[in-house]
Image 1: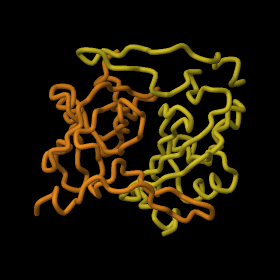
Image 2 (image 1 turned 180 degrees about the horizontal axis):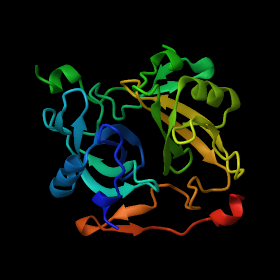
Image 3 (image 1 turned 45 degrees about the vertical axis):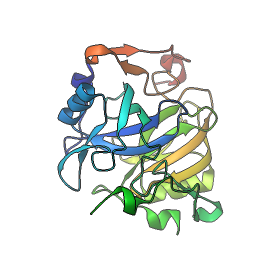
Length: 128
Length: 128
């Protein structure tokens, strides 16, 4: 079976892609791919997503330089989700400067607590 | 901030939830939650998803006994994705008997290869 042929796209033509640090297993982020962004990811060996807000391809790290070097790609049993294991250049995957987008943890009663410190200042990395 | 109030639901009223082994960081599966399934998850301390195919709540492990004991819940920067760290009872999260639903890995050229062996025989665990 072929990766691209196994994809089961949602009604918007996308699948979620879980991005995980290839070394320590930290889940860094979840973004979306369509077949062409997956093809580009395979070709460039860097994560290329489909930005649902901008409606365009999104080479992760294009503006910040913090690209994701792809080490492994997996697909789930249903074919409707991808798992991308990467080396995150710059250490942080989140636009807030946090290593992982999942930097908020639910405490008792569901109250959220920020864990860890940002690794960079987003105002310096993203020049507007 | 509150976990439930921070949820940004998609047009079907859902968010994807990445389920990760709390001990070794293996990504076990991705499923979907709505606010009520998240409330049940918080209350029961076991993963409760929304089954998109059956259109009903789905206590993971209800038929197999292989429930997921929830150890930690995180939410991403956008509030549109959850990360659930669990202890997977029975060891396997996938209905195929594999530990993880992501048991197929893309090789060179995108050809998929099954990694690992099933931990149980689905025909014995799911009685029809």
